[in-house]
Amino acid sequence: MLYALAFSLLGLVLGLAVGLRLFPRVTASAYGTLYTLPPLETQLNLGCAALLTLAAVLSATLPAAFV
Image 1 (cartoon, rainbow, N blue to C red):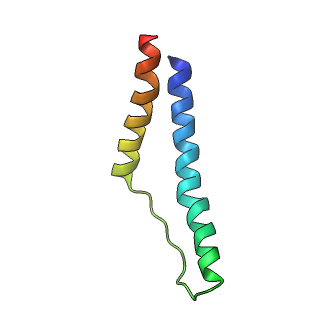
Image 2: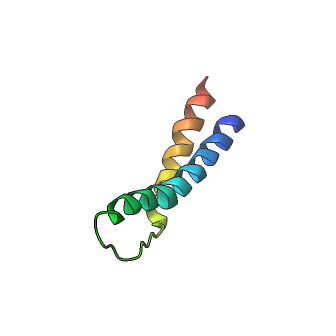
């Protein structure tokens, strides 16, 4: 169960990092070759991150607890 909890949190951190940093920059760079775009600003929505954390932890840890 600790294994499921640890890796769900690790996946969440990595997913948020990639989703908030890498994907927007790649997309803006691709569109920037065709259009003039303003500087890119990404913000972390704490409410959404908390909901994602809860969903990730519960969906990985609860099934592990019943196996």
